[in-house]
Image (tube, rainbow, N blue to C red; front, side, top):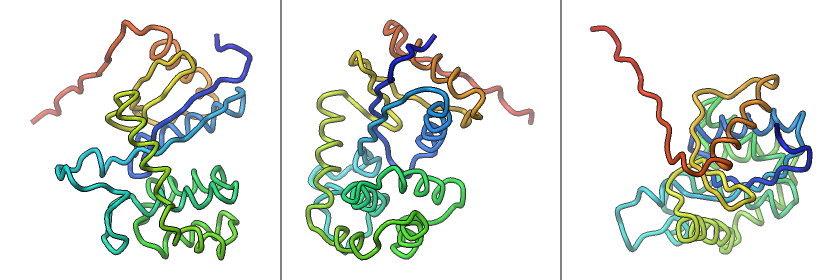
Length: 204
């Protein structure tokens, strides 16, 4: 059984990733019956997949369209208002449930308005040239300290790390059980390095 005390988790994530959306739903639903303290740390899939050794998401010119970068900027601007949690799930829902293009400023601003953030302050913070410094910090820490290669990657209190892909987002009634199983395998049994389910081939 899960310990009744608060469960501390750090999750490296990218808004582009559908598995991050499923993990976020898992944690949101599990949090209805468990005490969770989740730290969401940035990890850019665009960066890790780049083949240009001299290019980075955070140092690319502001006028260059970089997939996923605007959502990270929006999340950090929300953090500056103390409203990260209010924007995090709406951004994921916009991308993965509503199929909206979150690289478009007008889409991001609509989500921000709906989430109740201070829009003028949001715009001001979004224009700050240092807004991507936390992305650089989190991404480099993820790769250099923990060997993170994809999202979502969970960092557990004992220091164990696991890249997790859920087949679907569990319902509220199942979320605590799924999280318990996840922790028991990913954190409590480090000898299990990888489990991957094969898919049956479709008939011709």
